[in-house]
Each structure stands twice: as C-alpha cells, then as structure tokens.
Image (cartoon, rainbow, N blue to C red; front, side, top):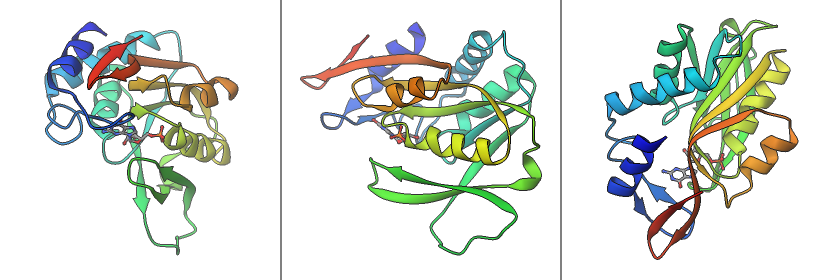
Length: 189
Ligand code: 5GP
C-alpha cells in the first residue's frame, strides 16, 4: 500500500537491525485517516471471504482492527494480555512471546465473544516471528473458529513469521512488506 510505505519512509525510525518504530502514526499517536484507508484496504483484500468477526491482540492491533471491522461491518474482538498466572475458566487463552519486549504474555478472550463455526479475520500491526498471530490461531482452534486469513499492517519478511503462517496454510495479506533495514533506511520488497 503506497500511502503506508510513504508514511513509513517519512516517519518510521529504524531502532536496530530488526525493530522499526512507528509510534507517530500507529503505535502511540494514531493517524485515523491512514487507519481508515488501511481498514478499507483489508476489506478489499479479503473481499472474497465471508467474515463474521475481526480478531486482534491489544494494544497496537486494535486501531487497524477497528477500521477493518468498520469497513467489513463486523464486530472486533481483541485478546487481552494478562500477566497473572491465574486465569478464570470462562476464557480462551494462549501464550505469546514478545521478542520486542522479551516477555511472555498470556492472552485471553472471553468465551462469550467467540462462537464455534464463526469465520474470523486476524489483524495485527506487525508480523515479526509470528507469535502474536500464532496465539490467536491457538485460540481460534480451541474455540472451533474458521480463520479466513491474517491481515498485517507491516510485515518484516526477514523474520520467520511469514514462513510459520504459510506452513499453517494461512492466507496472509500485508499492507507493507519490509525486505531489510539498510543503514537505518527501510527497504521494501
Ligand atoms: P511477532 O509476534 O510476529 O513476533 O511480533 C508481533 C508483535 O510484536 C506485534 O504485535 C508488535 O506489537 C510487536 N513488534 C514486532 N516487531 C515490531 C517492530 O519492528 N516494531 C514495533 N513497533 N513492534 C513490533
């Protein structure tokens, strides 16, 4: 998506060899017009699928997921992150290791918001090693949902997430695909 790539070039900051900071439009301050355009693009990319619900993980997945849900006219459910080891039994859970924070989060979704047989689209801000999406796939499997695909705002193709999702047979669509960070600059695929 050209608009997004231009914005990454303009405002993204390469922190080290594998982390991009985009906190001026996606991860802290949010540009709603860009989010809306991205939501419409996700709806276009998955137009052939029947989608009942959008799933994401808090916090940074929520903005793009809400605009995808708006464009698709379906509800959005976000998994909450819970550091506590004691979990109530009315939730679906999965463990997600975050390589940017180097911690494991237990993510959870209240069982009331997922119904067996629903067709869900997963949305997230970044695809790095695929752990966040994989956690949502675990929940989807446990809850007997049908995952129609994963819409990613920024994919870093040099990390192993894409391969993991391809191996799981997931239809992945990314709005920006980064090939590498070279001398502090972003190179797209
Ligand atoms: P994964 O689970 O695919 O390894 O990583 C995805 C999650 O880690 C995303 O939801 C995002 O919050 C965070 N993340 C991964 N890579 C980056 C990055 O380069 N920049 C930022 N800001 N977050 C990232």
